[in-house]
Picture (cartoon, rainbow, N blue to C red):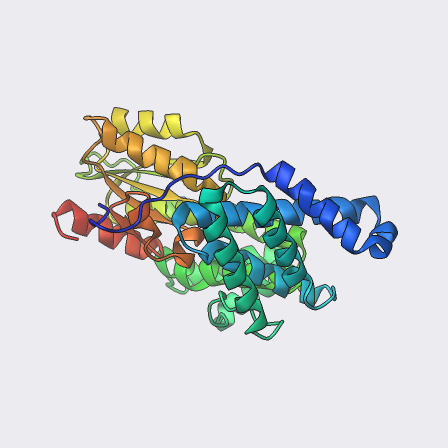
Length: 358
């Protein structure tokens, strides 16, 4: 549970549509000639960028930390550079945001919001344009993982499947295929997209193919005809409208390999459904995942609801996903019992919590 004295996540709801409109008006006025030459598609794209920037500010205000705004700004700068957009474009967006903040935000938000924007500008100006200071070190792929990635990027489904079949035949465990092939390949595909070296279609193709192979491998994880009941139970879910489910699918499979009774709900699971499932199955633990800070209000609501129900108040809550990598203490703010960086760690933490240890 959250330690005494640690900050609490407090949801913030900014009028993103209105604020993005004000930013757009300010941008069009400041760059009138350039704006006139923009296509309707480009204008829509700029508005979407403003909406996303305001969303990251909103979640930064909710956590009391500039982390999400800095992360978003850094990723946008990296993306803009690879697409040969003007250097300093994200800083100019942030300066417009700062101006709108001073005019439009409530006084109780204004001071923190202005400070957070300044921190984001400082982070961008202190880093080379092609380096995103929030990005982890370069991903090292094994020979097999590299071959698998190359097959995916070439849309060679048969070759990709054969590579995994050969790995299994040579004695590589499902556990190691997940951690040493699938996971780093997914990370690398995301990095390639960020650097404009892979398309959205290729990233989605990689995710879809890996999901299919995982489903085919699942029979190696389950125990057909098992009669002995499992002693511990866990519900695993991607919260709310979260559509990314590969990570939580891996977590579910790792729990199953550790002899837990697993109820996997997958992506896009409404909060009410998760609550009902945890209660009905009398789960010992629940593992939750999100990839976007915008899902945090649903996560906090879910955890508060679990704690408020006598039937679920003692369930152990383990959480993970990209937002929790950005802010290491965020799991405490939303009231979870622990944060796990990966599937292996989630299982280890759950087992430890079940013994009353932290």
